[in-house]
Length: 489
Image (tube, rainbow, N blue to C red; front, side, top):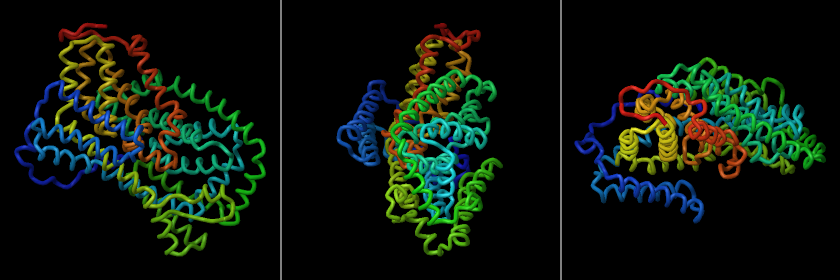
């Protein structure tokens, strides 16, 4: 994953739909689709960047403006309402996972699990090496488990605590963790995004992974070089922090029993994920095992465990760095992120109801463009679709089958499309704060998207390399064009 395999679970039968809901989307003219996009995206950017309105509110306002235009142009409310409810329903499993992660982090703090991981990191890592080691270790975890969500919510949270103790800026640490996590996620044959992107484009998964190296590996290597350079600067700035690090270790040792038993919960979670068990039950087992250790080893009461699950763990040790490091987690801490996910459904609804993406594909098909134009159009279209929906599960399954014949007809190999879907979906996802994975990433690591954006080098680097190959034609391959009238670029 960027991993939420439960998303495909069956849901209860929906209620009977009216004729307005069952009928095809009303076909709007191309100019109206452009106006719809301009109003929605323009108002969203103004609200967030210029007016500093909270993301959830900005998404609802922009989506409401777009819905108003749809209603004025004759799109029935029944269709808008049905698409809105379907969008919210698609967010339910990610929302439940977010809630579980909040509770799990709170319990793992109380049980001493995360403090033990932080202590190990502080004893074994140096400020200068931290960023590179964090990136590499997250890559390894994601490749083995095939899940970015699992990596971020376990080793990612612990590494953020280590970063605080070593004096590494949180934005640097989050960027390195994200780069490593999503590199491993893309390169893992166990990842559901990797499996899904290759499947919808009818590309062999090994071929798909190899072809992704064209864009993913250069961006990853550049990131490692930058992290080594940033680490050297951090090492100079933190040259006198050794005494503070020892203070943190001693303070944690005074709060918790940090023996190896406390590391059992993350082992349980990763074991379940490696066995391909669903994410929700795996995280619930992580919560249960953490609660048991808190009860038996740390001497916590059931009331304390419940409060940690709800409001997170908080402590006042007199050492500000330790308090900041450990006071985290809890169900309530995830509620603002849940609001963002629901609000994102409001923004995506009018475009689905108006058939905007269908119109864009129809326009691309009519142009009979060459392979570079088709692949460039596919990049732009999928990026736009992802920004509007925030979910690669939606965009992969919707656009993959629709774009595949256009790409094949243009003379390009379809492995280029599967790579584009991942470059503008999987690796872009942490940078979209209202998207499912972007909201999860920022909430779990405790760093705002705007802060880590620049340092999550893989996320935009892979897209830039993908665009380079499309523009130059390098590495695209070529297949005979069937008699579709397409011209090769």
